[in-house]
Length: 101
Length: 167
Image (cartoon, rainbow over all chains, first blue to last red; front, side):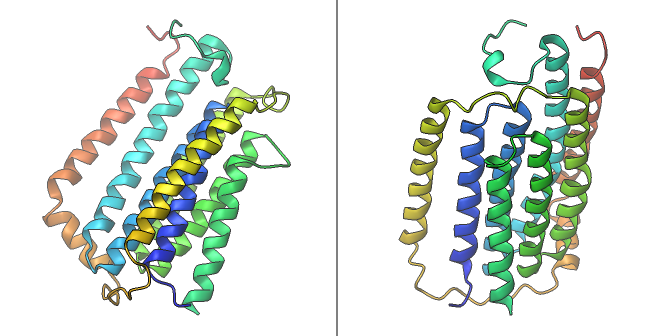
């Protein structure tokens, strides 16, 4: 069977589901963060596939922006996690159930 | 040939993505980070199959080169030993299964509703790097400049957050 747009969309949907599963199921902050990256990547794959099959480059520009923003977001998020770890000595979400530091 | 490579890269992406989230052999976050690298690289292969060569290069440079190094750096610094002793609680598995099932059902319905049997228009964008650069520096010049300011803001914020005496 010839590979078309729907094949890429199915892969993207499955990858997004995997990322969501990781965010809900895992209890380590860093692994949750990696699962968030998986979800962003799934969205990127869908955008690139749409861009290719509609002969429109705007989708690829959007993916470029998403990758850059994701890099900035990872830097800030990891700095927050490190600051939290310094205060509380844990990176496990069940130990971080209160809003008070 | 294209189909063969598609199935290879898609299988690798999903397998490594699964091993990032739920590795049956190791709960170590470093293992997850390593499988995240493999996921990113095989996804760059999918980008090449979609003729997005520039994005494939950016994907490897930014994710495999910068983001994963940041993750590993933080993992080494925090030294999380107690993750292996903890059990995954049952509530997390149930909530995860329900939410993933619901979202997966929505995706499936959406893909079926677009009638995947009909043939899609043949892709015509070829070797798009030059055209991509032209669009980026004409139509999308303002967002591009705002993005550079965003990176500067992120850098300042991270330096402020990493100071020893965080107020």
